[in-house]
Length: 496
Image (cartoon, rainbow, N blue to C red):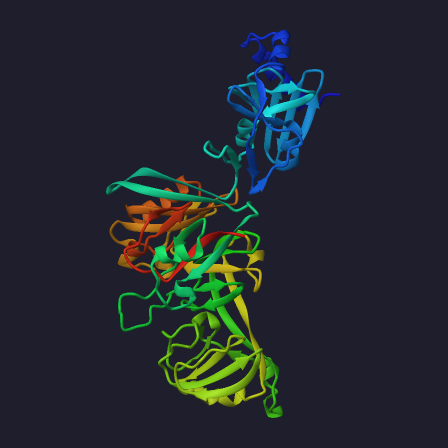
């Protein structure tokens, strides 16, 4: 029994048949001649398809058995044997194809095929590119290596757009996050927080599929440490706090490539699990506070933490008491600056007036600290948990929220000439509704123009990164934008 949608699709093809002269006898000939096995590889989402029969080539088009569409695309396939119509449903997409006909129904509209589907050796074959793109999949053909890539890895291109300053070059790297063979990673210059390194050197060292410069860092005053000016989450932990006092626009990702852009305030909270002095039992409920982490540029009177990502030593020129923690237990207190960081622990530095708390960190005390995320304007609020967020970087201002331009630099304390002034080289991150990451650089545009460009590229959420002389972009062996100075950190796409 046919349902009403199927009857509508049959009607589409009854109309189409009047526009196309073709006989069933010619279909039989079509099924016997001009078809040959195609020695190609097909990758979907980074996984190579396994065929018990090879793809077929007909008039320069690649065809695959219809059952592979269901198996690899997650679609539902219905076969109307009487009318020889194939119906494919995947999500909100509906496709209908008739054997031997160059007309197809796609979401209620009639499309024309270059080569129609056919039956060969009792199997129904459909055109791979047409069906893939009708289902909203990106398709690329590597002629040299004879490989079809469908939503796999990294794709890059360059285009030109009109801006107030005449035209701008837009470099776009699209990362297909559904590809299980790739991962995202925050990479620090020289693998340490607070140092600089040429972008080209970082790329050569890590050999990524793609990379873009990350967040702002201190570079104007060479007498100060070259530290990030924003927040970083690395390998599942908050490892740098540059703006703990505000809701900073932040890009974040999980180990399984879920991504989000949100406005986030981060902080660390210390906790005790064992206190040797029974007179200090009240501290179990109070815990211990942390001002910042892996940052020298902070108030003298504060408590800060330094982890191995800082490097071999704290590189701190502020005197104070350094509480050495190994395996979550205080093992020593050392007075002075620039002390070694244990590889299995961290340093709690008590500076200025905060040395008064040294009795709360006596040897034998057992403690730890928690990552806390206060999140606004998130598409995936469940992501924002300690250990779930695998990597993140803050920058801003935010450009797009849920498909609409929401640029407001002043609300993020970023209403400064470097960001809102004259046209500059700029870089940005965007997330599409199809779980694709856009890594973008634009030559000489304003921040308002950057927001418009990101929306036109299909970003559903987007944010500004560091730009100007730091603007950097790399993909598939090519440097698309090269900075004129060393940088502090980068976001990279790496093979798993």
